Length: 173
Image 1: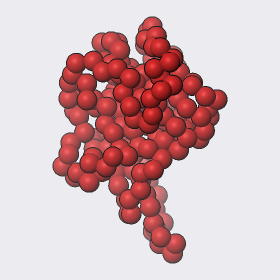
Image 2 (image 1 turned 120 degrees about the vertical axis):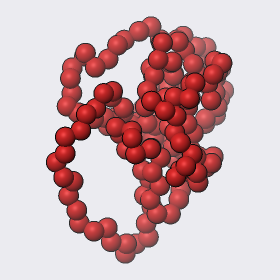
Image 3 (image 1 turned 180 degrees about the horizontal axis):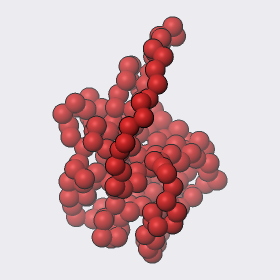
């Protein structure tokens, strides 16, 4: 999978409340902080992604035309998922496609993350609740390849604020 192209998303890409986590040109995740705000419709994902993610902000009185989505055959080769954190703090650990630990980020209430590729694991730092959205149909445990998670120092995790990298491996952005 290619990294998020700047073309067409330049304004969003340069927003401090939006981060792309990538490794060697491949987009692993997109993090949208609770403080992100932009009028209109802002798509974060390139049109080729199997999971589309946008932010919409409209004034009272705006009308969005009634519509339906046509039934189309699509081929989905990998699962992408979106998490919306309602409350708490969640540490997300990112891994390369070869299962090597790359870096981590802390998510807070109101944050949204699209997990696009590579591996990921989570540690709940404070009692948390969150939504998960991913494509179906569900194919069972064969969708996942589980592996050992990186063991990080909780002291360093607790001292970092939003978006702070705990550790970065060469090639990560």
